[in-house]
Image (tube, rainbow, N blue to C red):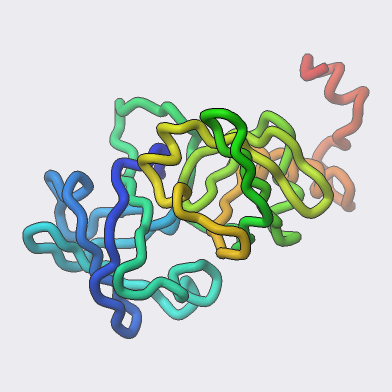
Length: 212
């Protein structure tokens, strides 16, 4: 489990079959074999480390379903260590399991902020809601607006400077993970719509249980 607060930007050094070697510093403090590190929001396992480099295995499935398959030597990737018990949660809970890949559709300077609009695949759209959370390349962001196919976020200067979003250009792919709470709500709605002993979720049910 992660928080979506990026600790540093690493550099991809070596890309081999089902393996990535990344140069980093902060995320390697107190690292151990088997630790989880989110790489552009993808939960990967450390299988080797030495000095300022670590190697992680990446399955063919992960490569095909994320933007890691397009990473080459020299690529910048967002890095975050897994959340420790008792640690601060300043972003939102991020599992490191990508729901789909989208792409940056447009970016607009808004004073000190940068407004970014992303196209999202069907697998992600149902989890989008204004003021809700989403992880883009592992970065915890708040959705300002959402349409049928896109969502827009306002990225603060700190997040731009400390992540690879600063160099992201229109058309480039990104890893997207919807808010885990939104997924549970979607699951409840799906269950209530089918033939299930679970209670039907409607406005009356929500009012009865204090949600509205």
